[in-house]
Length: 431
Image (cartoon, rainbow, N blue to C red; front, top):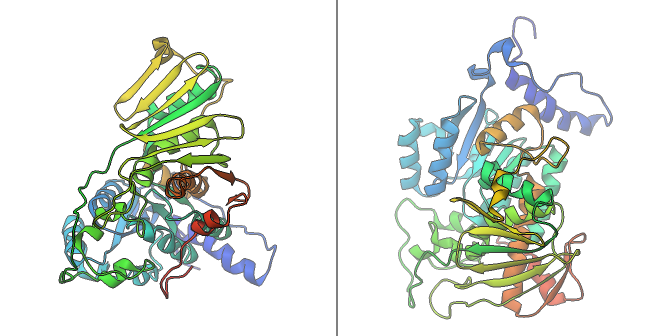
């Protein structure tokens, strides 16, 4: 358009959203627009070149994510959304945004054409519905882990991300740590010999389950029906919501999907199995028999890969340990220990396997939104990691060994287990 300078944001929209619209009208039409403009042209930090963000879900993690994105020169938080008016107000004060930029219903936020990407920090049962809706409106997504509530919806989300050419980053921040990457590179380059076992330790439940409960009045300013969304209707109680949802299967998967999504993710990375999974799984958990919580209090399950490697997940720590024929490497957020200790001084040589390097998970997402390159924790990775978590929960619930086909993503010869791959959703929230 004469007299109007095309900026980075316009070009990004033309490169992806324009392609989606144009391809429906004329398949095979080629795009002449470049994906990005060098920062030297207009300035990388110019307002027109910032990634505009809508934050959905403003609990403890949600507010932390808002601050993370606000701190980046390359992004700008333009809108906030939460079904809890109190949390929405807290986040508004944190950001200084106007009331007009605040929403209770995520669908209203997604209608804004000036939003490039969303940060999805909602409870687990909302991860896929909201992320899918965002992708379908041409937005990129940063979604907290675990990426999914069920295995079937995970595959559906991955397919939609591919179909719409979206960038999705799973909030598995440990992949953006030098500590975890180096540990996985040691394993992938044979420094501990042939790997035969991976031990994944996760914490026990961090919230006490009350043995008795009774329905409570819904607090003022809290849209409980919208909070439930696709989940089955249930009477309100404060232990259902705001973090404690993690310990109820209708909304989460307990510590298996909470911390397991972090440390099983590292197991997958170190084993080089990001696009696949185990072929057998069995487990035994201790489950509550009173109160609202339904997920396992104590966890132990074992998964076996096609090459014979065994993954064991159990409560009792926060780490991933790879055990091989020549030693072992144990990595956590506190650091790395190994045997022999000399492994810490190893150097990964130029011709060896070097894993994707990111030292800032949020910045990696923002960079990939601009470049359209695959982020360090894309949808397929998040889905495959969450799948192992779900498989562990299913095995512990059924209390029998299950055979799994990671290519077809279904159980072999087990109709009961296959029915647990997905859940029914309340209208109108069906995918």
